[in-house]
Each structure stands twice: as C-alpha cells, then as structure tokens.
Length: 312
Image (cartoon, rainbow, N blue to C red; front, side):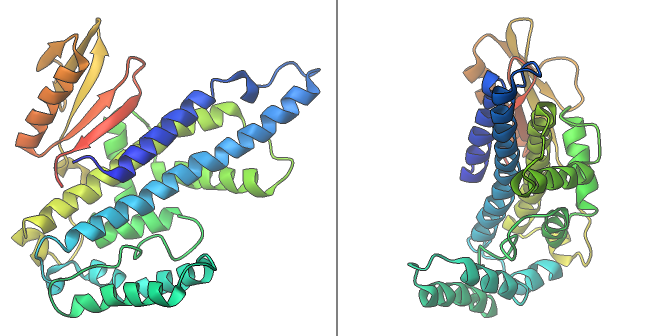
C-alpha cells in the first residue's frame, strides 16, 4: 500500500539529497570567506530540514495507522494494553500541547470536541482513534518517542528491530537510536547555536540513515497493523511485545549490469531481470503482495528511492 506519509517523506529527503550536491552548500578555499559563510548557513538550514523531514514522517505514518485501525472492526479491548493506554489517557497530553500551539484563527473548541469524541469512541464500537495520539505531545520527536510508539504496537526492543531491518537493506551498519540522537543534537545546534558549523558529509550520511529509520519504522508498524487488521489471535492474546524484524520479509529491486533485477530476501539469483524498470517493479509488487512482503527499490547508485508495503 502506498501511503501519503511515505510519498511526502521520500520526495522531500531525495530533494534534500540533490540539494547537497549544489556548490552553494560546499566550502571553497579558506580565502572564500563570504561564500563559505553562506554555505555554512545553508547547511545549518538543511540539517534542520533533514531532521524535520524524518520527524514529520514518524508523526504522519503513525496517524495513518491509527486512522486505519478504526476500519478493521477490532474491539478496543482487543488492542495491546500499551496501545489502549496511549490512545486514551496518554493522548490527553498530546491534546493539551496541540491546543497550546494551535493557530489563533483555528476554532480550538471544535478541535477539542473532535479529538475528545475520538477518545470517547473507544468506549463502544466502532472505535475512531485520535490520530494525534503519538508524537504530538511535544515540539520534537525523540528516540524514546519512536520506541514508545512501536512498543505500543507490540514490537520488542524497537530500535534493535529498526536497526536490523536497515542493516539488512544495506542502508546502515550502526545502531540507529544513537544515529537518531546525534541527528537530533545536530538539528538543535544548527537551529539555536549561531556559530555552528555543520559538515556537509554529516547531512549526506543522515539522508541514508533517515531512509533506514523511516523504512524500519514503517515496516514494523505496518506489520503490526496487519495483525490487527485480520484480528490475529496470537497478536490479540499477547500480553507483552513479541514482534521482531525477522517476521518482516523483504524483496529488493536493484540495477545491475544494465538491467533491473528483483531479488528475494537473502537470495543471490535474480527472480526477474529486465531493462524495463516499471515491469520489474510491478512483478515485485505482485510477488510481495502474494507473500505479504516489503519491496525495496534502489536507484542506479544503490540508494533506496521507494518501498512498497504489502501488509496494510
């Protein structure tokens, strides 16, 4: 399933990646003082945009999933306990914060009534979960927020699972919770410390890391939602997180020897090979849909430029 959150994230992060190749953000010789000062300021801005792009994806994708839960027919008592808590009394924190920052031209009373109606819907079916329950209770998304969201959906040791999925996709090789925290610190310095110098390579590296975090998060929350959607008895009866990265199966499409090739997880022989990229993607989607797998699409340079979720 193609989501608006994913499309928005990829379009923004890939434009950011292109922006990092412009001379305007590169340092010249030390004697080019004016240019280098401008480049430094532009890089600081890009560091803020890069982190905000990932933050927005986490919030938007979580909201999409919460909106979809109400269409499954599941009863509120059947949801994991952490998720029930998050979308009821913990969502009040998000509601309070959002009201404090809402535009003065917006009808605050109508907003509160709308959100409270969603919270109250959890008492009787059909449920209509408040889509601002996760990551809307403060100004910025932090590593603990992401962990909390996935724990609520039954994912065990969330950052480890995100890192595993990203590593298996060849995007990163380190623990992504550390990378996320470093990016958050870099964003804070770039936004609030006037003399901050953000290296170009730091932002270039974060583009790939952000894609890894977004993909891993999406794969795990989508897999969890797929269990809710079919009222999976194991998922419903579980009293503690149990979902791991090994449960998420993936295929990938890469460009090799002037052809687009589809590979299964861990396979070295292509399942499909063709010069027509669109054809290979469609074949990949069909195979992944049958096996309820994720499909990763890489470009000619080995960067992930899209993925398709066949769980939701």
